[in-house]
Image 1 (cartoon, rainbow, N blue to C red):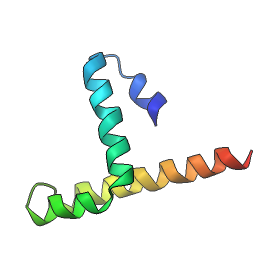
Image 2 (cartoon, one colour; image 1 turned 120 degrees about the horizontal axis):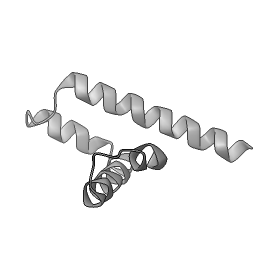
Image 3 (tube, helix red, strand yellow; image 1 turned 180 degrees about the vertical axis):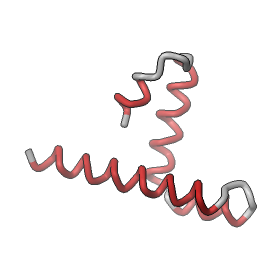
Image 4 (cartoon, one colour; image 1 turned 135 degrees about the vertical axis):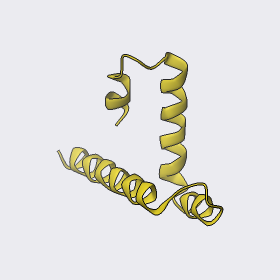
Length: 67
């Protein structure tokens, strides 16, 4: 996931750092997304997409650990 963010060329270094920090935070605080949804700051489709990305990252990390 970190490599994917680093591949963006139209994003500043500060924006990439913010994205890295946000992704790290969300991975550790999955229930935070529910709070955002409860307050109308996140829709169900976006929440589902985030969960799919997080699951994929978790699966890739576990596959890497097995090698």
